[in-house]
Every structure is written in structure tokens, then in C-alpha cells.
Length: 290
Ligand SMILES: NC(=O)c1ccc[n+]([C@@H]2O[C@H](COP(=O)([O-])OP(=O)(O)OC[C@H]3O[C@@H](n4cnc5c(N)ncnc54)[C@H](OP(=O)(O)O)[C@@H]3O)[C@@H](O)[C@H]2O)c1
Image (cartoon, rainbow, N blue to C red):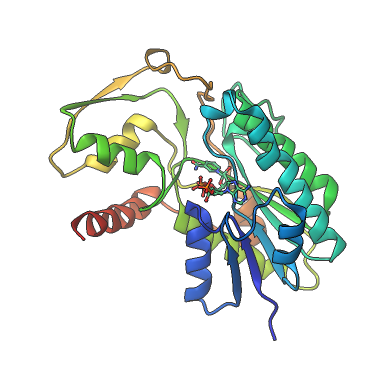
């Protein structure tokens, strides 16, 4: 019998979608949310991964601004726990996929970031995720690290849902127009992960390492917001600069990821975020009318 895919952090945006898409594809899945398996607890992780064919960690401390004052929690969840999971997987010869972020990159090189470009995180969240990547690489050679960005879904805490919520009650929204990135639907990440797992489960697979995956084309938060409200009664959108919207954590001005490697190795193309957004907005509309 096929060994199950074990999903840690199954209560988050990506984890939920991964469990859902895997079930739709009739794969054996053991999905654990935070209450069922806390990734900082070795005993709970060891029990959860027992008998797994592949382990995916979707759990993370994702509150980017709060991380500036909660460094210890951010490092425990984003740095120490992924190394712990990778180590336990290594001990049992289980391949491991971990998710990381575009926020490991800092000052722009003037082109999309490649997997082997130097990292230089601009904030505590990015630093903790970078430390997590390093811990995974050191603990288990059979790892895949998938860096993604600007994740959105019809559930959870994300930019799309924040815009819809604010747009329902405000006449004007001021949105940062000078940060560039690639919005990525949680469903698209889930499907990419399942395709990577299929390829990496073949006995002759050797392309372990780090990959980038985001939606295309690159855009700004302002243009993403404009697409969210397109064709609807919209609040007035005003493009502002990062300096007009100070946040506790600094954000990279340009965190567009070069996603050619994942296409070359796995045949996974960048999804058009505008197509995925339409699906997510439809699901949000259904949710809101329910
Ligand atoms: N969101 C983004 O825009 C974005 C961008 C780039 C990369 N990423 C990366 O993508 C991955 C998935 O992110 P996401 O957007 O799905 O995040 P999310 O919606 O915030 O989900 C994270 C999940 O992890 C859980 N979690 C936190 N601490 C845990 C622990 N100790 N044990 C078990 N579960 C724990 C959270 O549970 P609680 O809710 O109960 O705390 C939550 O369900 C993460 O690695 C993240 O760093 C995200």
C-alpha cells in the first residue's frame, strides 16, 4: 500500500489546500493541524511522521510585523522546528518538503531572484525563515525547499480577504504601489507540491534542493488590489509609497522570484495569478453569501 503523505500545519492556507487537493487526487493523507501536532514538540512530530512516504511542513509563524517583537516564537517555529522535522525525517529516510519565502531576499539586484542568489532578509520573519532553510539543508539531504510569495486563498488571513473586508466599509483604500512581487494562490502551491512529490518519489530522483514558485506576472500590491476590485463597485484606490505606510517590519521593494528552475526540473509552469484570483474571488463571494 502507498505510504501516506503527512502534512504538518494543515490548518493554514497552504496546508488546508494541500490536504484538500491530495484528497481530490485520492492520495493517502495524514493531515495535522496545530492542535493535533505542534511542530515544536519532538514527540508529536515523531508520532505524526511515523510511516510517512513524504512529509510536507506548511506550519509557520507568518505574522510578519508581530515577529519583530516576538523573535523567540518566530525562531522556535520557523527556524528550530523545521530543522527538527527534517532531522526526524532523515533518521527514518523520509523525504521532506519545506516552504519558505521571498522575504529571505533584501536589496534588489534589478532582476528576479534566483535560487542561488545571496539572501539578506530585511526583517525578523525573513531571518527566521532563512535560519529554517539552513537547518533543513543541514539536517536532511533529501529535502525540497519551496520559496513562494504573497499567498492568498478564500480562507485565512491574506491580502485579498483584507481588501474585500476593508473595501466593504471604506470609500477609499490607500495601497502600496512600489513593492513588487508575485501573488500566489494556495491551491496553485498545493498542486505544485503534489507534482514535486510525484517526481521526487521516483527512485532515480536526485534534484533535491531549493525552488522558487509564484504566480505571474509580477505586480505591485496596488495593481493586485485593482484586480481584486475590477468590475465591481470599488472604493477609490490610491497608490501610495512604502514610506507613506510605515510598518514594524521592513519589506523588500522587489521580491519577484525567478521560477525557471522548477519548470526545467519538474515541468511546473508559473500560474497566471489573475486566473487563480478569479476562482478565489468566486469562492469568497459564495462564502460571503452563505
Ligand atoms: N502567507 C504568505 O503570504 C506567505 C508568503 C511567502 C511564504 N509563505 C510561507 O508559506 C507557508 C504557508 O503559509 P500560509 O500562508 O499557509 O500560513 P498560515 O495561513 O499563517 O498558516 C500557518 C499555519 O501554521 C500553524 N502553526 C503555527 N505554529 C505552529 C506550530 N507550532 N505547530 C503546528 N502548526 C503551527 C498555524 O496555526 P495557528 O493559526 O493556530 O497559529 C497556521 O495554521 C509558510 O511556510 C510561510 O512562511 C507564506
